[in-house]
Length: 180
Image (tube, rainbow, N blue to C red; front, side, top):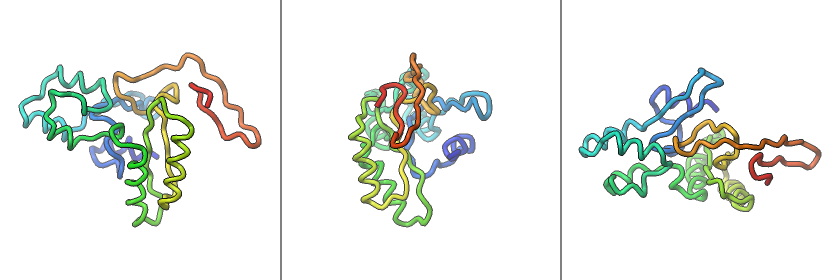
């Protein structure tokens, strides 16, 4: 769904999604021919108000998907600016289920997984989503595609080998990077 890109361009909410990261690059080459570098404006304003905004700190933030371990940022700011990577998969699903309870249509929500995620981890999320009444759920394992739509600046990966996925009867797909 284009909601994420439209939200960034329009400077508005992206639905029930938490921030992907405080600063990231959105790859929109296919649609508008360039990349969008995003820094959360509310976060930037809070740093300025706290008197700690500087370019070196912003560079450090741009290389991470979370600010929770950056000690230069006061804890009261870190508590407010939690990202998708700071939230456990279970709580991503529970957040979606809370919105789904009062929505007739399916709620759009992505559960962001680290690259080390196992098929069993993903299975647990799908089962929990079903049990909680979600009408759909999307999971994304970091680095599972050669070009990621969104990536923290320091985490852009290029997969060396790309194997085609052949769909046959009973075959549910697989991951280009790990073969699972």
